[in-house]
Figure 1 (cartoon, rainbow, N blue to C red):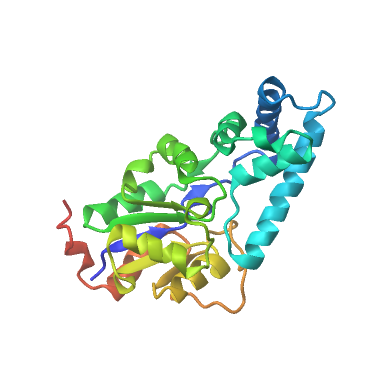
Figure 2 (cartoon, helix red, strand yellow):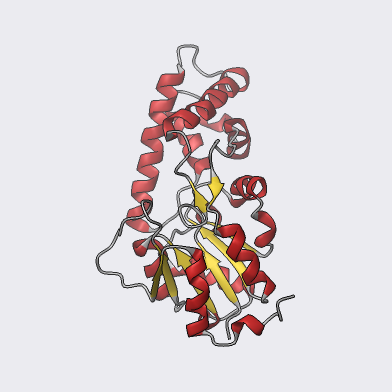
Length: 258
């Protein structure tokens, strides 16, 4: 019996194709961080936004390189601490939570759910299927919740919203999938995972014993692994429903379309 469907977030549910370049909106956050560092942390007077941005980019890239090698999750709070320490701010003055607040993360303009998300996910909920979210974000989930709230997705995931930064590992590590199942109270065979990355989403879900559906949105996704074979492939979430019909006959009567 199908009890839950778990999803990746970015490029699976959330469309970033209309968002301005990363450097543009990221520079606004670094400018806010620099203002805080000058005002509250006695940052070196010679420190410029360009220098701080360059050190941030280098530190973030190193964190992700380490993460890909170890599957230990990067954490933006640690990155911010390391960035400011590297430019001469006393490390004993750096509070990760305060830095994240100063960094002032806000959803970038143009970010939006794919149209099929708000058409299909409520159907799953109406038929008694619980929904979960697992993202390889370096931001804690309460930060990513800003996006979900702004785009109308938050209420669809009342029980299971997981960020890698909070769990401590990234997909494809099976522990992050196991945590999702635990939150939803289901077994691997009672769930399905949907994601756009073969290497992270599909391989990870399969290692955790969860049937995995690869969503390859036209023009958005290219295979990131030639070795991983998904249990099913779709190009729109509308095609997920027939897949579930094949795998879990009668699932639509779970909640009697309440």
